[in-house]
Image 1 (cartoon, helix red, strand yellow):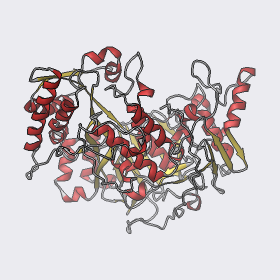
Image 2 (cartoon, one colour; image 1 turned 45 degrees about the vertical axis):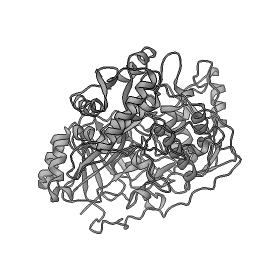
Image 3 (tube, rainbow, N blue to C red; image 1 turned 45 degrees about the horizontal axis):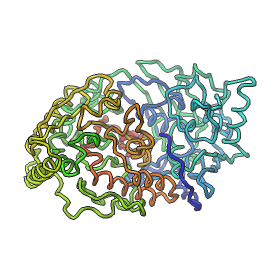
Image 4 (cartoon, rainbow, N blue to C red; image 1 turned 180 degrees about the horizontal axis):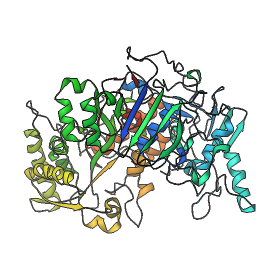
Length: 617
């Protein structure tokens, strides 16, 4: 995401309090856990890389961050969601201190952190890790450093800094620019940005900002190299499609790590295993598998088996994973340009039918917001209701920060679930949808039933899910044409010519870190997306200068709670205007052997298993 530069607010931001440093004797609610033993993790994989600056898969990033790769900040472990979404210093002593412009951030690197060879981790190691993201040899990972560091770019938009491997006169100017943007003074690290980024502490929790020791760097050949500053390091070579064993880093100390409890003595990673097979093996709980945990979600059929048996429920966890499915009305469509028709579409969308088609309540949970469960946990009032209306007036341009505080008085009731758990929309919703659709069609001179073309990424499951939604739309008075697309889905729907062919697009999204800033601007800021070439990720061509301005303002709010609340208010505006219709947040079910304790998922890490706290009886 390339955020738009905004006028900086003249405010300072004090560093957040640092939680107590991890104590291996602290069992965090798992009183039977003692340090030691060998934990086996099972996954389909394949792991593409263990190089922090190249990791893009959420599961791999979560594993690396809890086992061996440490960044400036990290999300805390804890007994509940509120504790888990607390950002804290990891390599740094706090979450950073900005200047008044929010463009210069200072981090102090903890004393006493040691690499696996016993050498001390320094500020220069963090700087070197950041530098690797710029090298053409290091590809595939997060590119936030390239996008935001205060380093000049070429006319084509490429960075003038070419990374730590570049040499010669052509590289000198870029090296000087990087040294100015990322500077060390002892253990004090200063990072200068090209624009204000209020939630920069969240950005530096991503693996692109992990430390890397220069003497251990093998450049392009570092795909599976692990040189650890965390509690574990790789013993021997990583074997693609088979895995490897992570043993204790003898120089790691809980006194310098506020995140990881590091309970097992070693973690055996086995990859190349089908999720269904893994789930069945762990459920069987043979003696050799009692110390095992699945890193992939169990398939829906096995989820139902787990949910039906209390002994299995006791050694499994089912939780949201941050991936939200949603629908996008096309504002260029004559049909969806009408607010009443969009409102009818919202009311006729049967989320429960959609979830049933996906596999039931263990596979997804209904939501009206594109902001995932973990992001909403960071709000002062995470349960604040905000049902979409589709009929709210445009936002007041004088007060963009107060987006969507006033909703229409004729807010329609949300979709309801019947007492017997069957999937059905509330009758009053259907009646109201029919009324709104008829009024909107008359307004636009459209004959009924109203044509509705819906594009989606085709698969056997999604074909069933969209047919389930089709039933509710048809009942409200739409004449539905489903448009399944099997290949290059997102490229196809973002092309300019598609705007005349489809009324509604299916999509999904997950945040890069636990903030709405990685959701709303990339998807709905028209300045970042819409061009002659197409919609970008703003598939419905939603354009509102006041909403764009509200996003710019939110990017510069220093206080984390105020900032997330501002994002939530913008999200409410988007829903009330019918810019999107959220369907469901996907859920994952992880199962563990009977000797595993402390099994939990982490909402800020994509709902993955939190290896920072897991242990063995």
